[in-house]
Image (cartoon, rainbow, N blue to C red; front, side):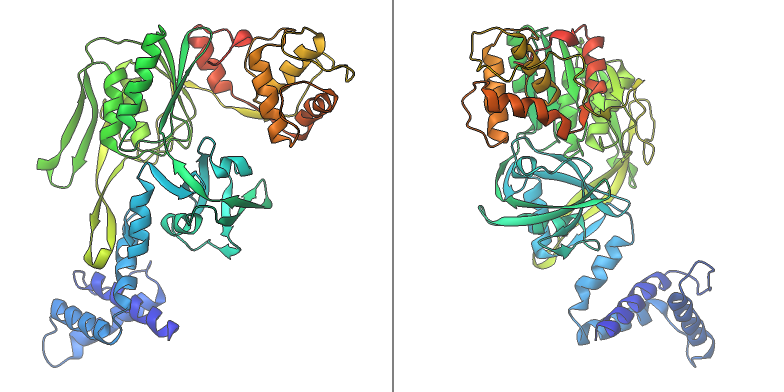
Length: 478
């Protein structure tokens, strides 16, 4: 029966194509399509009456669907899927999950994904999400969920598997550096704040936009108000790993950074719907550096390109993803839905970045290295250290916790409150008693832990920080 359904579906798809095409066998066709073409030509030549292709198609579809109504979804899925990688047909459950994905709160594990070479790749994990706590990392490739191979599933289907009831556990299998890893993750409520911001002791603002959802414009305004209250004049805008989202929200953000003029131009099949999105920013307010990478896509590329081409800031990183198509969603019959590519956008200067991406002003790559503590202070492994005390061991702890991503405060021998907070978090993550004291056991863990991990060097951030006048040797995030 399954084989019959596959054959019928192939016939339906082929007939849809043949309804408006001449019946000529083409070299690039599959054998099945070639055979159908030949049968249609045979009918054209031999049938005793003229063949009306449209009428033949309609009768064929009516007959097949009358006997096999369940094939309608299969046919429509193939029909939409034959167009481009962003046009999709959704079954009712998939449609519900797709709409949930653009909400700002849902139950899941907290990851963003995209398809790369037909594989679901993690773009990033949301801050403090179950996925982040479990150890899921950017560029992990999902290969199974709860032991089920997902290689033939769409992003929406995979997303559906990852979501579920709060408190339930899902086992996610990923491929990382050629190794299969299993993670048992407890689903929880994911509250997606798309924008976050912090200020360094040098007075430089650091703003991260995870994606563009329905609240991104307002969240950006709130962060900038906080920056303004702290006298921030220079900002690092981090768009790395941002998969895009709602174009209108990206344009709202652009109005804070892009000098007056065009932000982006949207072009459609029907030219009367073409639209130019504008910025009305009269005067540039901030010195701006924008961070991008190969996972910066769609609406995030709109923002980055408009900043670059308007002179609103310096773009630093690697070439972006290269998605310039525009999709619209629509609800179909019986709670089905569809996402359809309806147009494309051109940058402020009229450039089409599709499949090419945005080239940054400064090409900078991050890298991973092995840990080297040869220039760090030694640790005595003999004395407990508390807030308010001073020692070379304390400086050694600061240096190592900085390399591990826990401490970003002043590098000296004084045990400050920032170090206490970092030690507490480190102790929690290592399963130690979390009380902020550098005891003997904690010293052993602080000394040994870096050698268990490869150190990620964020040269892109470092370059942006230096470009805006910051001192990397004394950076503190507040």
